[in-house]
Amino acid sequence: MSSNGTSTIAGTSGTTKTNASDVPTSDSAAVARRLQSELMSLMTSADSGISAFPDGDNIFSWVGTIEGAAGTCYENLKYRLTLSFANDYPFKAPTVKFETPCFHPNVDQYGNICLDILKEKWSPVYNVRTILLSIQSLLGEPNNDSPLNVAAAQLWASPEEYKKVLLKKYKESSP
Image 1: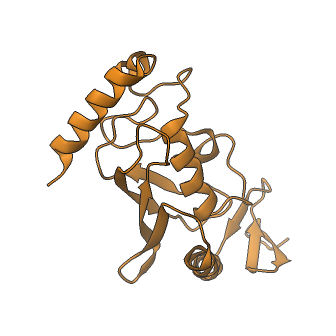
Image 2: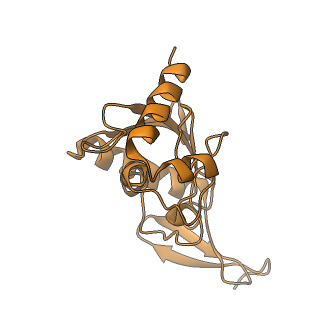
Image 3: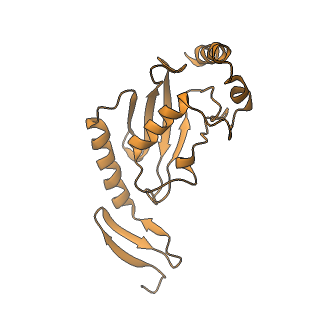
């Protein structure tokens, strides 16, 4: 251990450090390499209805899109998201928000998402692809036990009414 309370652990994706309390941290070059690798993997995947790319030249800030899955009330609806990665990614989940307003039980009016893998269930094995697929799945299968939008959660039990409100709000937000 060095005099500043950190030790270095050799890893496959760069240098990882642990502080005195054994919480892993990464240097920004290692995080950038990981994100470049995830970008290449995402670009070559055959997953339908998801995509994400860095926003300009900043590898730590991405723009993603999710299309609602077939057979759900979100089918044919397209949503834009932002993903922000900190220097301690993948040890800490990125901040992911809907930019396109999304009427959903687990999304608030500001685009914040209530999804366990973005909070307490986060694991460094997750990546951008798994995040986008999880959010796409969440659209059709909300967790009504933990709603951020109580009105949407209450309406979910009435599929026809829910879809009517969803489409109205989606059209209102479209340019």
